Image (tube, rainbow over all chains, first blue to last red):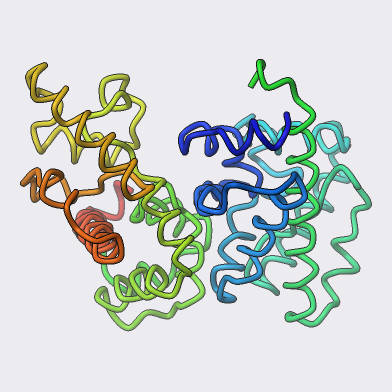
Length: 168
Length: 168
């Protein structure tokens, strides 16, 4: 897909294609649509990230809270978004042993109790660093977690833009 | 449901219950969750509205763009959210004659072309004023449309809070 194709999309098409670049927050894609015409694909990504950065802290936490648990019950039940399902499965989280799944569930619960949002990780980079991140100060961890949201968004955008537009 | 019940909800429960107070924007409920403990039910509503008001204009337009067309193809196909389905059906939009549906589709299209977001109306108050609102200046119409988002949110909150929590 090239930038002319992206710039030519009407609102419905744009949100259908880019609505889950930020997990379960189509509001962000719907806001970015205002910024067309975009100069290039980096410009597209830049507008997603600028929107996230401009939100008040409660909104940034809201974004994080729209993310699912890693290796959580939604993965087991198959109710994740298609993107999360692919990412978590691809990172091997589908095939964890029972012990490892239990350990990750405990870390997830501790993390959320401490920070008030779920542990977010660009699972395709997959080093499971919940234990280390649990020790960070809250303000630093909010920045780290939003950085992961952006990595996830970059990878999802790259997938979408590589895709054959005829198949979208 | 009383405010103690609301304040006792964990994040998942809160977003399950209040996630669609603003149509297809669970990010907002997830952000409001940070504000607990809430002093009363008006305080809950106030935080939804304050979040909307604090967004940059692109984000406010993003909220509007997450709303479906009135009497549009999603109503026909049954793919609206449960809340929108109830509201649009209750306002008689399900049983429009073909002429009236066509006229409304034309107004919807003109409106979206002019303002860049769909025509949003608290359908339960149901006076179909698309034609009049088409004539407004853009800045005024953005305020009017966000006012409708808030009316919709108020009615949805009232429904939720009246509901028996055991049935939620």
